[in-house]
Structure formats: structure tokens, C-alpha cells
Length: 390
Ligand SMILES: Cc1ncc(COP(=O)(O)O)c(C=O)c1O
Image (cartoon, rainbow, N blue to C red; front, side, top):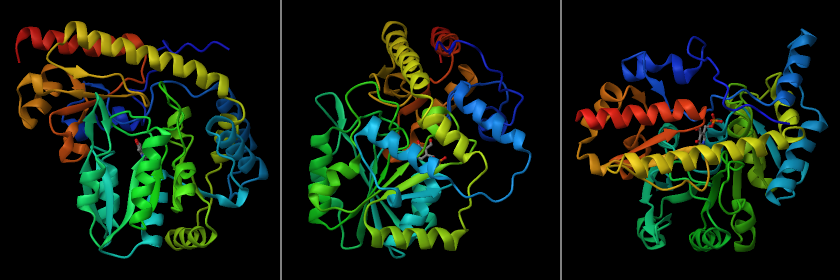
């Protein structure tokens, strides 16, 4: 198989959120979008074939997932992540955030606290507070040049109301692949405080350095209960076909979460959930390997370009995800000026650091899951803007 990731896909006049919402969110239509975390690439041939076949059936009534769906999820978790799971542990949910919402509502009370390390995926905040729970931010710190947990700070922020530790594994936006040792230390901390861990592992297949460890594998020996959120959406670029899953080993917790999901809306599956999951997990591993090579190439090219041409910006190679977390302090602009610089001077739509919590100030996140030429075009725009003087 040889996939042409250099091929330019034209999403501009489609319903793509990344492109269509530019005017609404950035006040301008003609920007190059490198914000929301989906990829500019077509899905794998296997996924597209399966969707085509399902579409040809012509009837799209209520669905019941077949055993093959569960086999696909189990196969993938075992093969790629050394995490053998029972079929019963798997709960389908439409999106990761729906799974997070149901889990929070099922396992905590209104007013309970959720500890989370920031900067972190911005929609966590709205979901936690929308469920009537409280966010407690503990900022990540740089240790030996790597973003790391600050266990002392986390300890200090615990209150009797804190019930959940919400982990982002690997971490969006800083791109850390948490090591087994780091996860074990965090789990010991969670065990001491009797926290339940919710681990969002939606980026778990996009790993460039080290090995991804499912948090549940570190939670188990520490005696910590863990609800793991997974999805094929980031891996195979299928976020538009809403499909995610939750793995909960403990039966009593699983029942509570499942009941809450049913109370929210009986989770019938979209007709393309099975084609995407089976086509992805059982038939697209080779495609994924090629994707990872391309994305790693983009990452390296991005970092090199910044080092050689944009010395006022600082970036380290992400260990995971196609997201680059860029330190903009060298530009000497405040948050509002930064926003205007990216939009007005560089003509780029990026994710502002403040979306990821207060720890994200003076940072910006680039999504580099696009053809390399477009990525370099975006970087050249910054270079030109800086040459002109901002
Ligand atoms: C860490 C993380 N969790 C969840 C999501 C959203 O997943 P979903 O669309 O399945 O709710 C994203 C999307 O960017 C993400 O980065």
C-alpha cells in the first residue's frame, strides 16, 4: 500500500467544521485552518469501501452492533496496546465527550471536583462545569525539558470534594506520551485519595516516541477504578461519523455509567459505526503505519522550520498527536495582539493557548495533519509577517 498524503483534499466548500466555521469563529473566511483536531486526509480505502457497501444497502434504520464490532475493538486494544479486554467491558458511546459527560454524571455528585492537568483539551472545561462539577487545574511543569505532572501541586489542590482525576493520555496539547512509571506514580496518588480515574485516550494511536500505556493497566495494580475513553476518530480521521467507546472493567461502575447513558438518550449506533470500526481496527493498520511516518515527517519538518526560520517561537517535537504546542513568548505580544497577529498578519486560524486553560497563555496550538506543502505555506506566512514587522 502506498498512500499519497501529499494529495490536496479540497474541503473549503464542504461542511467541514474546520473550514466552514472560519468566518463565525475567526471573523474571516480566507484563513488557512490549522485548529480543530481532524486531518485533511481521506480515510483509508478499507473504511471507505465498507462505508460504500453499507451505504449501498439503502436502508438506515435502528442498528444493533454485531459481534464483529466488539472483536475489532478487542483485537485493536490487545494488538496495539497490550490491553486484552472482555467484550462486556466495552460500552459504545457516540463521542468521547458524551462518554465523559455520562461518566461524570453517573459517578459523582453536583459540586464534586475534577482534577485535571492543564493546559488541556478545552472542551473538558465546558463538559465538567456543564455537568455541575468543578474543575481543579493543576498545571503541568517542565522537568528535564519534558512536560510532566507536578504531584506536589496536585496533592495541594485536593479537597474533600475532589472525586475524579481526569487524565489526557497521551496529552493534548503538549503531546506527551505518559510513561508507565509516570502513570504508576499518578495512580498511587489517586489510590491514596480514592479517586476514580477517567482516562481520555482518543489520541492513543498517534504515537511517535515511546510506547503508549493504557492508564487502566497502571490503575489496576494500584487498586484504582478507571473508565477509559477511546475512539477510532483521531486515528482514522472519522470524527464526522460519531463513534467512540468506553472501557470500564468494574461491573458496578459500568452499570451506573450505562444507565446514565440510557437516561441521556438510548445510545443506538449510527449506521456507519461498524464499517468504520471494523474497516479501521481490522483492516487499516498498514494505512496507519504510513500515516504515522507522514505525520512524524511533518512534525520534524515543522520543528526544523521553526528553529531555522522563526527563532522567536519555541517548539519541541510532540511525542504524540499531530498537534504542535508552540511557545510564543518571544513575540512579545499580549493575548489579544497574538490572536490578531495570527489572523490578520499570518492569515492562519490556530487554537489559542488560552482555550486550554490559564496555563496555556502565550502558547498556540498548530494542527499539522495536512499535506506538507500547505504546512510549509502556513509557516512561510509567519516568516513573512515577522519580516514585515508585527
Ligand atoms: C483529548 C480529546 N478528547 C476528546 C476530543 C473530542 O472527541 P469527540 O469528538 O469524540 O467527543 C478531542 C478532540 O479533539 C480531544 O482532543
